[in-house]
Length: 391
Ligand SMILES: Cc1ncc(COP(=O)(O)O)c(C=O)c1O
Image 1: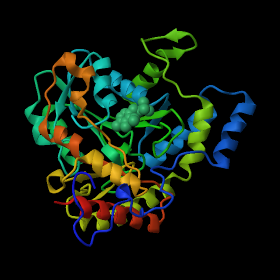
Image 2 (image 1 turned 30 degrees about the vertical axis):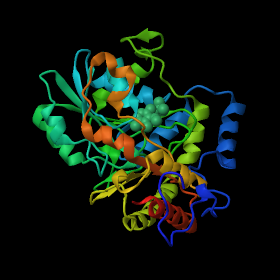
Image 3 (image 1 turned 90 degrees about the vertical axis):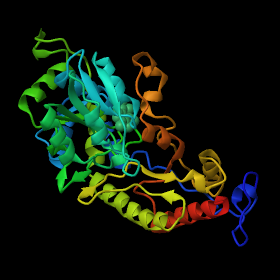
Image 4 (image 1 turned 180 degrees about the horizontal axis):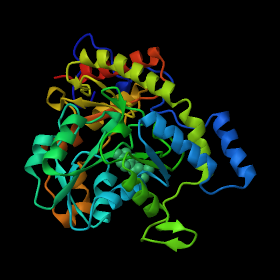
């Protein structure tokens, strides 16, 4: 071993030539289409009706039902979904509270709307926005708060809504990673002004590209529909400036086919997460995501934190050792959002917890095809690597 030596009794790591826990490795995610998905897409191709039509409409209806929202509107992708949400709720010149630990789009689309993202720190254990920090950062121009249900774990919605009420803020939830997650028994579509989703290929509901916007507000729904399609309220009658952010029916058909298996797949992710929780709790130096009572995450990603001070190595070495054991990992994300050079021009703050997470987080395989045995062996590999590197 190059950077730390294994205590006596620890099996030799595969990275050092020992036997790996998985001979063949295990997939990080489950993507792809079933025969039914392909048949659904083929039916649309054969019909020639390629634009957004009955398939998109049916997907919207089903998605609204499953997420507990009144209006669901398909769109081209999760980034467009955010643009539509911000376009309907904020104005140029506004300040918008956003987490400093999220995918870039949550914040960059605030900039695209002509507004300023105010980066707020997050809680280290839940990865979700720290509302005490957010409240301190409110400016006279702050009109909205955008929260990401990151990794599929719902934020503390009651607390967000209370803060929003106190300061008269619009609430946008970025649920790109949280299809079918629930908060206190309700779908995420029941809360806030607008909720956005991504159907990017690797998402829990992956159609390649695609997205959805939900709301329970009739006025916002109409605004979003207009923004989505050039402000068109009648044939070639454009009552406001808008975009073309529409989905198409091939994507709609794939989504409609896939959404039927999503509830069972989400349940399976939850079972795997429970198994991981118990295993990770027993590993000194590795921490699991914290989930408050009453939440049912969608577990898009299962993200652990390494207490690096307990190990003689950095995260990359830890991940390389896991890879050699047959366990692929990913880092969501390698830098906090305001550290992206794209935001240099707005001179953002760099909240410390988010910065620290960037060094420590590590996502392990999570998908509906993982067997109990695979999940246990992934845990075994993490324990093996942790034991070997612990100082
Ligand atoms: C939290 C979050 N927001 C927004 C997006 C953007 O979605 P899309 O890639 O569909 O544009 C993503 C996609 O990775 C995401 O994870």
